[in-house]
Image (cartoon, rainbow, N blue to C red; front, side, top):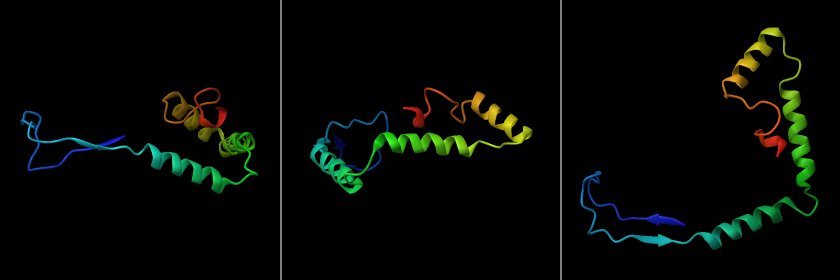
Length: 94
């Protein structure tokens, strides 16, 4: 649900906003329609398990064949949390 408030002048943390009347738009039906259209566009042959398997294979290829310096850099980025490591927490494994 999106809440839109009218903007009048400068709003600050300490300003009294009592004169503003909040109103909302319920986007639930639009979101439901959008998701249905996405699934319809994927078609009946779409296999989410195969898509995830392909994602995991592509991720494995992305960081394969690194030389020693590249591997150290990769390990450093994984340890720092910049890149996801193997196992839980990586989108392709879910």
